[in-house]
Length: 265
Image 1 (cartoon, helix red, strand yellow):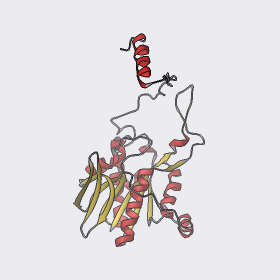
Image 2 (cartoon, rainbow, N blue to C red):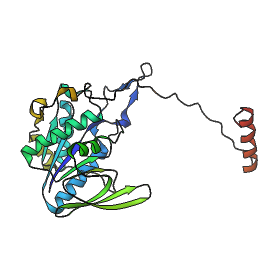
Image 3 (tube, rainbow, N blue to C red):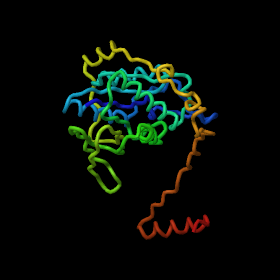
Image 4 (cartoon, rainbow, N blue to C red):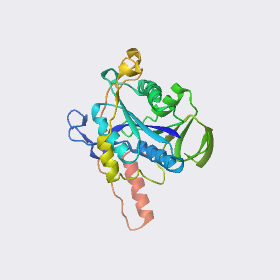
């Protein structure tokens, strides 16, 4: 099975700090990581490869530094990696990004063969929109399944265990298709020493708009119908009042009294 995984390099949100004056993200010194949900998608792809062989290709869109993240993907078992990068892609919202990636996928298919399965993380932790994967499926006119926690490959289809608010569903879909992954019961495997050495030697081709050949009015800020107008840091909440009387009844009476005095009730 020929599988493509879309991956994104994101800032490590555990290290994010906010400028108290400008109320903007302080990016200096903040490490970048493979988006966690994309790592789950990659592990699902590698497990399918282990079970029925095939090939796993990783595609990312971003600046040149995203190659470090792609090297990590290669070190754990991905066969090839491509970086989609061009200044005209900068500032793309989810619609423009999905348009670029869907066309980049078609470009990569000319080199790697048609993909049976495309996997994405359900969302990126720096944007949390959960839109890019489904939009890629729409651009490619592929059936899609979201919130996958398990994938089993069949001859010309895949069976997906999908998480829902009520429990789980099992859905069978013919390939080619696109699936987005949520948190499963496993994490991405660790790289081997051999994998790390091979990743360092690997060539990661960069696809600019010269190779993809898109109308630049449909990419970047020009092709983005949505734009971030402003960002702000929510005000820090003040400390609450702890009520601890001799009994539950007394505590409840005290709470009612305080809320009444504050004209809340």
